[in-house]
Length: 298
Image (cartoon, rainbow, N blue to C red):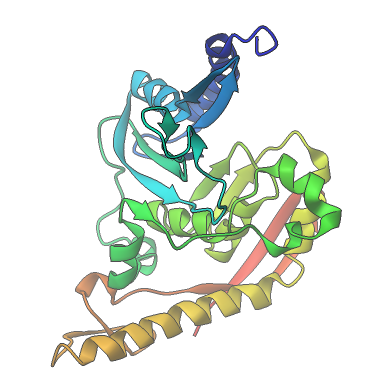
């Protein structure tokens, strides 16, 4: 279709293929479960005309048509420092084009009701996030996540990088924190280098991923070589960031009412009291399966 300069047909054909994946997501996701889709719109000059192809609109429409509740999305802004990023007619109106420097994180819930979790579930309260994390993570604009995994930046991996559509670890790490609890199962139908599974491992969730490019599996195995150490560092950094926040917060507020049950430092709200982190103690590999043992992180 593109060879015939039929951009609309090419766009629709691509989404017919993507709909096969979304159909399986619709089938396996539990009622009340959350689907998060990181997608960017595409731009292309066809013939002599510059076009935007709104991928996020097509995908949102698919989930909406399949009885998903569409929730507010997140704009992940990825600014470029390139001096040549502006397109079109330079300084002259009216034919210059707005730069496209963001991707979408679409958030859709299966069905019309929230997920039902047992009242006062220990797993749910242990899975809570800090008040200041809530304020940052649930903003509709993310500007502080940049880059791709370091292992993909060297020249030997440039081809794999372009094939993997890799994204930073922080992105799935936040989303898994935001929309799941301990021992949930997280599915990534575009597994790539396994960044979502890595985040799930760090956060004591189960995960399933599928990927048609088997060459990428080696990159995932490399990323979990020091999994236990990485897990502890991430947990420690997160706790230290909270302590730093609390120290600054104390300068503005005389008294903080609540205290963490497990870590003994102050927390802003009652819902944060039972926060508990886990770290990987050991893991075993069985072909494409990984079995992990966890311990409470103190």
